[in-house]
Length: 220
Image 1 (cartoon, helix red, strand yellow):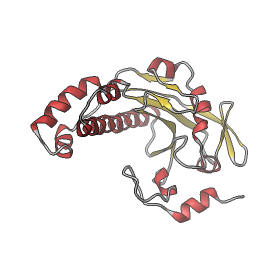
Image 2 (tube, one colour):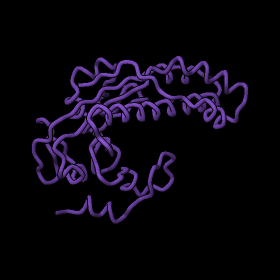
Image 3 (cartoon, helix red, strand yellow):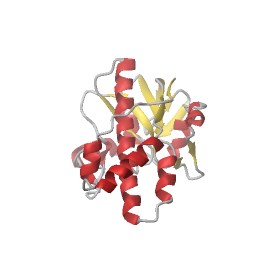
Image 4 (cartoon, one colour):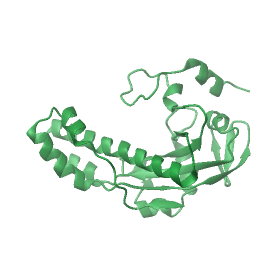
């Protein structure tokens, strides 16, 4: 298991300033927010044990998802992960009385979380000699509900506590600025966005692919 306790992430201050309209106040906001970001992550290689139709068993933990089972139809190992930038950015934003400043701080935190993912993916590729990877996260689509966070966290027992990430009773992560899921090796580009028909998603990485969605979700 790889626990990355302190991740150096690449911050493009010019891009952030542009998003925040390049004001002098934005520069001060960036400088006050960046020291609060504590990027940390854990990932590991995990063995695929059994495929059971609409479910897959990974090292004794059962994941109920037809889509996940089909995406991993040929996989022998996968890479469960959790990453976070901690709770300080959210606490700083919550203390802000100006709604625009809260929104700007949230943008900076989300940007840092995306950069954390990129850093983790580079480490994952290097560590295991992977060329192309994709991922899915519990709750990202209806076919893999958020309560599947629990078996995912079970695969990382001890490490998530070390990161300071936990699950609420409804299986949402605390701190909020955290990501979890399963990486897997792939030959073709895949984004879970391809399975989601919701058009107005600001984080969309690929257009909806109705043909692929039908293939992965169709009853046997």
